[in-house]
Length: 559
Image 1 (cartoon, one colour):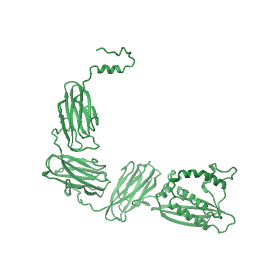
Image 2 (cartoon, one colour):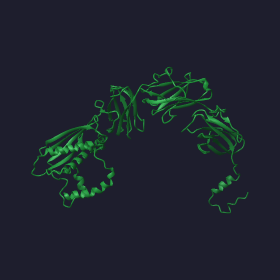
Image 3 (spheres, rainbow, N blue to C red):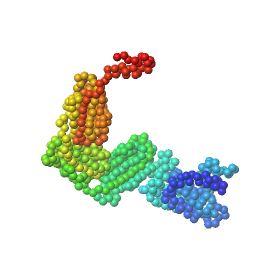
Image 4 (cartoon, helix red, strand yellow):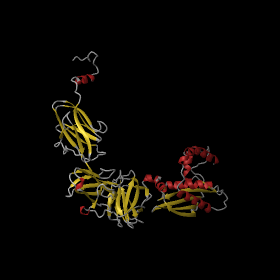
């Protein structure tokens, strides 16, 4: 046996040295449990023995199945029993005998390791996970009578590492979920601020239920519950205090994972159901519950146009909340007559929630809508207003189940007058003369497009290009509005440029802003000029260049 131990040490030491920087201690729960088990064994065997008693350490079973948690416990306890160097005991390798036998390190003629010595004592246990707590019961069993010689029971909060070890077992491949049963009548506890991995939707049609209790919350709050992982999950939330009252549901907020948000109050209970997108969807996932505390919304009540909160222009951001789910916020924006004419009104939100905005005039006529025109998922509306007066902004969450805090502000600015407006369609296209003028245009709002038209009395090469600091995109059409060419950054800097040989006729040009960063009020110039004349022999040279078998004499062209 000493020879075997020496061989194992020689085999393991280089690997340990190579990975020294990656070594981490076993989870504290396993370490504590192993120490308790060692003490239990040494207390359970007689103080005096005629020969060393044989000890075998089994794993910890959950729901009658072996787990990696149990395997780590068995290995740690076995090692620490050996390190005690107690002459009363001999420690078997237990369930790892087969691994040692296959290693090829055994001396020739070594006895049958698959049988080994019959153990006198076996250390065995069970583990249970409930409400975020790991419960463990370990017993020392005296054989062959199968008499319990000693036992311990422990309970401690389950860390993420322990949860992963509990579920990342061979049993997981068979579809076992250590959190089962987690039904509507027996939901698993989900604590706010907790990230729980290892839940599995399996077999087909499986549903996992969780109970979230809101505790220690002062004032109003907002709860987000979401999953992470590659499994396509679907979520439903019930309550408050009623597991049969469906409040909100969601499918794919991010990738294949749902996210549900709702306003909550202290003392309320909510039930969360997670299932696969359809009956055949199975797999594991991680679930998270988060609760944020908010004070009162200073803008409320502003749930209708009649209750609209004043939003002063050109001032600091105003804080607001979309709470509860389905909340609608209205704002009144007053543009004084002293502001003048030809003004650009911009209303935008800021924050982490996905806002959606509508802008109305004082007669409640919808002027413009926007979803993600601002930063990230924020709304931004910029449009030219033809007169002072009152305007209304309506803000909601883009998702029916969404809620949370955001900020909002309004601003006005003067826009250079565009003498060519309106020219937002083919019918209202602005004529531009070839080789005679450079026109200056303004995008009066972010989605504004300008149409131009020009005519050629004879065929020729034409260059259409913009100038300035605005990132423009351009498209060229024939008289029947068939697309001929288009360009983004073919000109100088971010300007558009199209060079094309065109037959005689009428043509249209559409110019807009590149939509990754449109800026209302942006100015640009545009011109249409004649390019170099196409050589008369162009087609002949082009044809000859495609012929590979011409002799040098054949390539001489006489004009």
